[in-house]
Length: 593
Image (spheres, rainbow, N blue to C red):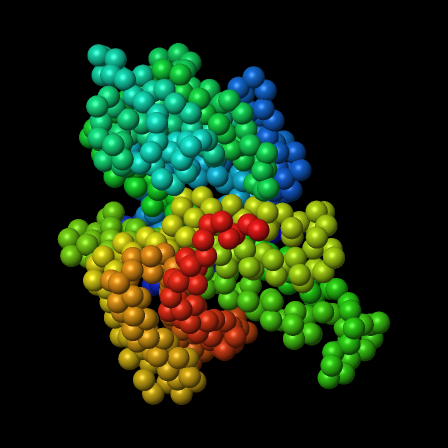
């Protein structure tokens, strides 16, 4: 099993040096979030993740959750770890003081969430989903609902879930059947079955607050007729509500987290937000969850990289093609071989580049929530809306690639459970599915965010890239990368226009091009973040530092990314422009013969 080490130095680099956290927090009025405070939080969270959560990762995978008579028992040590998590005050970190929180910005909570995700993704899902429930209630709940539910969620005494999917519908929520009948006393009787509910039932907290989508009588068909409800496992007076876990799923991975079938049998619920506006309110939860899912891709890349790097340094096999590098040993460590280095650098590029992408997005969340400048809020919100589907889909796709490289570096041992590398692959695979599959995120990006805005959302981001590249004119060391990024940044707009023109003739072209368009977008976006890190590292070296190896590694990894990974954009461009006919021409009957 890989020994997890919190990437504290790299987090400090991203937060303080690249993203200028001190200036950022001052600009949103979070003066308490000084570099020293942020470092203390990173350090303490890192210790908890290394010492408490990481050792339980393998335990959770082996034991899984146990279901009996509607109750779920979590793996050994999970409940005790959660009690320690609550005792240390972590659930309240980035929530408002008026509800019992510590008032830290969301981006600091995201740093903690990354380390939890790397150390033990399955465990982290229990408190992780609660944050979405908290944000939903804070934004859309009544004062009474906030006092009753939000304070308990913030303290960690209770946890939360999101209940969307039903047996007959996955991401198409317009056809959901769950019903909500008014009871005449301000409450509603919620009836229906929800599936794939992460953390829907467990023994770690004394109550679970379900955020549930259902239809009121006479509601319009489709997504315009969906309302949102709070349905607690135990009602505020302590009465057991009529919501029960019918079973838990037997899954490919994340065994330590309970994925539940939840049955609502006239369960008492309370409307949150306006009638028939539930999906709009739920997007508060879903957008949070999408960024959280993107983090799983980063976490998988980081954890797999850590394990693969240590193994590659120790494992002996063959000699270097240019002569023995460890002549005193019977063979050379496999890290000397170019193909092993290719895989390690690919993992490193995705883990560290993805880290910056995620924490840059989390600072946009800060601006949306805390900035007093309406124009800044609008700009940040629109940019975040554009980047969210890229982060969610691209980072989870490359996270799985990185995890597979980890297995490959280990060779046959990577396929054996006791080494822990195959678990990372299994655990991460769900990230490409939940909160909207890669295909759905791609349609959201290309169809809704880009084409429906007449390309304005894309221009907003490409303008940022263009201006950054302009600042690097005359930079001899980075000029090759600048030229490549400049060219792709221009091409991004051109291919978008070409796809849009095709779509005017046949709307299916959007579906045919979407995933390749998203992956193309992801590679260009990550190139921007790697160039940003390379420039930051270059500045640190020029100023003088005793960490020259750290900064030089950043520049070399950036060069590797631009030379070895960024060229994938060419194939995605070719495929997205190839036309939808080759996908749609075959008749259904011809698939089987």
